[in-house]
Image 1 (cartoon, each protein chain N blue to C red):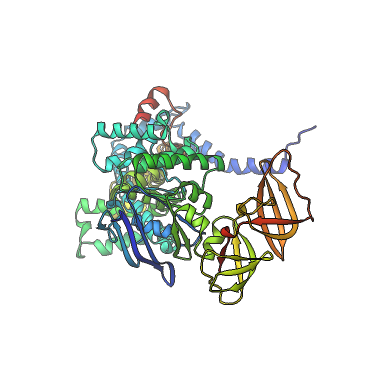
Image 2 (cartoon, each protein chain N blue to C red; image 1 turned 120 degrees about the vertical axis):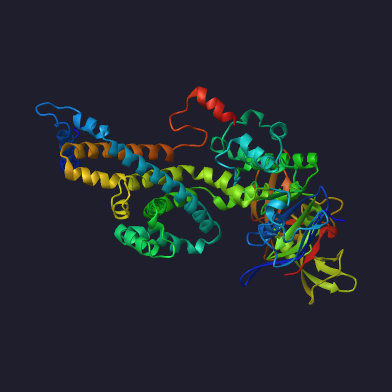
Length: 351
Length: 275
């Protein structure tokens, strides 16, 4: 039995349907990310869980209870916003205590809980600060503590890191994940940043124009994208053209060689597109890599620990990285080279 | 390098300033000449010794304060709701809030007398309390353009929809959200609007005169007809009062949460910051 579930949810604003038949079941204590481009409906789904939007059709259940029509202030959810949304008239203590006062906790209980939360986010020394006296990262940590203080059933994070600079973003996302693990709180995290989603989540939901294209662990989504949208949106992909040689046996011809695909061929004609992650390719073959395509090196970007190489293969551009070693001479631009890969790493994508 | 004084702008500034300052100075000078041959504050003394002065001033102050409270209670939730839920109606509401600037107070008060006169269904003018209430309503209407604008600007400065959602997600009801989150954050604007309301309604003549209330405005006019030096003294005082209001408005508008109106005093702020 899942702790939080959304079943067959649809949301329309006038003629515009932004969420279409969305289904998701989340286990207690799970960390789930909604990933997608802007306008894909991920924030709308989050707001339906929070109660700020009522689904046009469908149901939202939390802990076995139908909350679809329940007001947001009755749902016991904690929410963190992109813009922090701390109350400007209250200091850190006041902000964290707000939900506790609403819940009717006594003064000493409130004080204890606020101290506990301040310790959790490591900002005990800033209890008297006002929001305008703090940095974005500090404000967002206070917002997190404020959301967690009344012990919500579900924690909702609406792009909480998007307004922060890159360095804080990485450290805070690790902090959020640590706190989430420590408290074991069921969490939904909305982001448009794939690296963020992959690094932080138990499971990811990749959304595309109102639908969940794929739901799975970060590794599943990255390694086995189920639609071409997911494949293109998450990570970088290299596309190779290939010909079907035997449909039944899943045999295709690529790089001067016939290989066998892992999965059934979906292409209806004899042409198909194969996809490869950059890390599956290399210039020097390893034991696993049984196929190679030839191309012209078009760019060599020296980036320190890795060297990023771009090649033209039959009009398609492919990109891959190679690790730098002191003895390595990088290829020169215009040089013909072989990019090796393993036939097991190739998957078909549909256009 | 020689720094030249821009002559033309300087002359313009001096002429414009003298336009205000010369009459002000003349009035002040005149107000000091009550006792023949010497300059004294005798006229000011005379004003303060008048019972009627204190009575009418007290009455008007009370009526103005009532108008401020009533105005804030009506306008803050309205402006909040319009911004949050009915943003499309904002131009309309703004237009309505500006109507009192177009409709003269005389029209307003005659409307009141027709609507609430002794022959009407709700004869408010038949009793003193009813008429007092009408006067306060009139003040609320007249100060609405300033109050609404001040509050609406205050709300534009904070993200009220996200703050509302944040409060709701923490379990707060609508009323609690308005009282503990929205109100305190637009307090500076409400205070600014209040000072404007106060300075408008304190010396207002038409409304109390036609409603026959013992307010400060009619007293000022009466005094102007009966006496020579006291009106000048009153004019100077009301000028000082208006300026005082403006200074306070500025102080409150620029105040940040957790700070007093005055620069932070160490012994005060410690207590304040613990809350």
